[in-house]
Length: 295
Image (cartoon, rainbow, N blue to C red; front, side):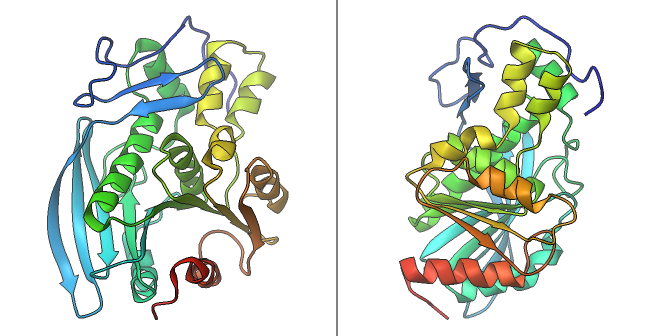
């Protein structure tokens, strides 16, 4: 993070769209003195297009129409899944790279929703992670894109929960694992969390090293996934990391996991960085113990 990334500001209790607290028709958020984000996400409407269907599963493009723009998602699901996943991709990941994965999860009896998050270069507009830009919005009483993304994931969970009436997990790889951890900590209706090749951003530590205090630190704390990891308990947490990860060091992933409550499982997998077939096998094996194998 470059020097001067966050300018000091005066902010006491922060709620977007003042006067709308408690009104679920309008989204709002707050950040407490410890830097913990809370969100109230307005219900979304959806548009759907069936892309493929056979006797095993249906693949659908679902567009979430939110108050802050459209968010594109892709759902692969059997008719009667045992559980569902809101999957948050890492930087630059596209749905096409997960076609086989979607088939694998549906064959095992799980619905898999790929969320094309804001600013990831896909079909959903937005900008890449930019804490300075988001803090400027935070200071002005607007919605940082980071918080909008959290609401998008909450909305995605709501869509799956209402459609299938099954447990829905937040899962993400690399940067996506960071967003997914925040969403799972903020939304108690997520059944649990799966993080792959992920860790804290390090934004809070960078801000403190620059000598900032007060609101800049509070905002930076609200972005860190580790701020929310313990809040997921007693729901389960699985964190996967490879000793050979060249992007996010293994020790960073292990330190991140140590912030989780019980029940928590840290699993070293074969490969380097990001979700792969070995991770999929291990997740499905873990869930088979809970829901039974459907393959």
